Amino acid sequence: MLANIFFFSGVFFILNGIYLFNSTVKETRKGYMKDEDKIKKSDKKAIIYFIIGIILFFITSLF
Image: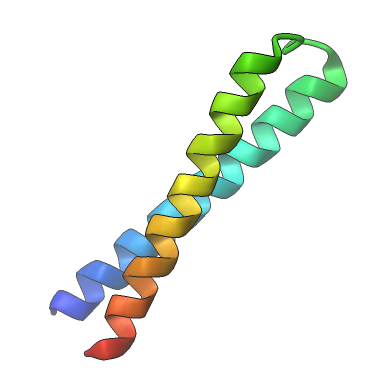
């Protein structure tokens, strides 16, 4: 049961990271986000979410 919780949390973090990357790319193409600091912060959050998701998948594989 604990492995299931880690797996679904990993899926949540990976999907959230993908959403952040896609939203920044779309907004940058449309010209809404011209502030580079916001883009960098959003990309850093997405990378952190990816890393957390990968760690949770690794923990799941240990069970």
